[in-house]
Amino acid sequence: LRSTALAFLLSLCCFVFLYFYPSFVAQGRNRAIANDLPFATIHMAAVSGSGAQPIAIFNLVLSTREYKGLDREIRKIVNYVNLFGYDLLTAMRNVALTTPSKRFRELLVGIVATLETGGDLKNYLNSKADDALTTYRLEREKYVESLATYSDVYTSVLIAAPLLFIVTLAII
View 1: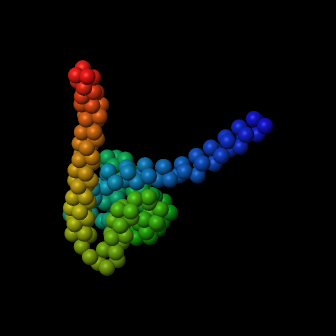
View 2: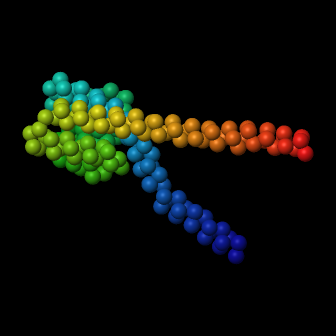
View 3: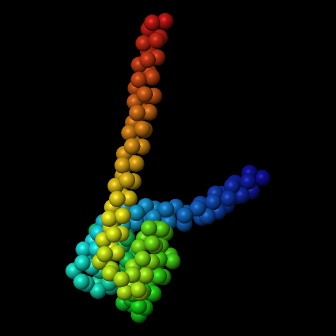
């Protein structure tokens, strides 16, 4: 009876782990992409400002190896174009469908729309870079504020409260 219960418990644990593991991996990739995206967008805007072709932008960003979070996604785009023979717009659409990051998906779809309509890629990437950097700064400020709140709670609960209790005990 114990062996059956243990086997059932272990199989349940295994099922739960295998069920939730892909979402944990996707969340980790999403965080890594979110951390690198503002800086990669600035890099892409600078490269597009020099008049480079759009595929050259992705090749240069990939060759720097600075953006570890975006490395896998940009490598997919380059592989779709160089190895599988897709055109750049189809490659970006395919990667946009599978990326875990909503912001990177919006960037790729925006680049596709800009290239299809004949818009100015340099201006689009510059505006997206400004927006991404502003969002990144706001998120960092929010993170610092939450750390300040946690440090205040830590100070009050773990430092001030025991001192108050000791003083109260001494007075009593």
